[in-house]
Image: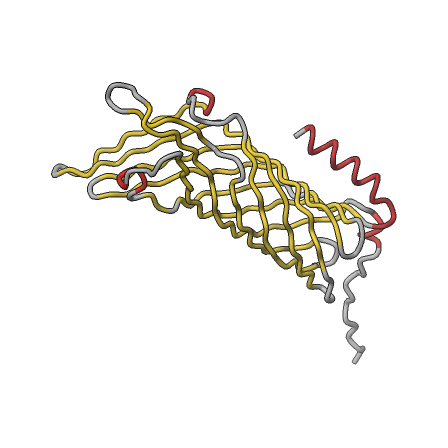
Length: 244
C-alpha cells in the first residue's frame, strides 16, 4: 500500500496540467481455473474434476491521466482466487485470500458522457490465507469439513506471483464522478504453487507448477481529485416555469 501511495503522488505531480487523477472503488466477480504444468505427463486423476471457482475482487483504482487518450491505472486491493474440484460424492474448494497491486496502461476515447477504454499490464499478488472446504456425500447425508491457515504455513505456496491483465470497458460521466463497467482476462505468468508428486515411499514422481487464469467482470465508480475538474462541471439547470 505504501508503494501504491508513493506511485500515486509521483504520477500526480508528473501529470500536472496535462491530465488529472481520479480515485474510486471497483468490485468484481472472477471466474478462475488453474493451469497445471509438470516435467512429465500427469495422471488423469490429478486434473479430473477440476472446475471453475467464482470469487470476489475489491480494489481502489487510482487513474492517473497523462493526456486525453492515455493514462496509468494503479490498483491496490483484495483478491480471492483458488480452485474447485467436483467428483461423484466429493467436492473440495480452496480459496486463497490475497492482496494485489496492478499497474495497467489505459487508453481512452471520449464521446460526450461515454468514455470507452482498453487496459493491459502486470500485477503482483501476495497470498495471505488459505481456506479449504471438503464436502463428502454418503448414505447418511453430507459430511462437511473446513480449515483455514496462512499461506506461509504451506511450503507449496509462493511468497508472491506475477500475472498479466488485458481488457476493455466503458465509463459514463455523471457530472464530475464516473461510473464504469469493464471486463478483464487474467493469465498467470509465474506459478502460485510449486511442489512434487511422490509415491508411498516418498520418491518424487513429478515436479509440478500451478498457475492461475481467469476472467473478471467489474463495476465501479471514480471521482477526480482536481478542483478544476469539479469547477468545470456545469451545474444542473433548473427549468423555469412561466408565471401565469
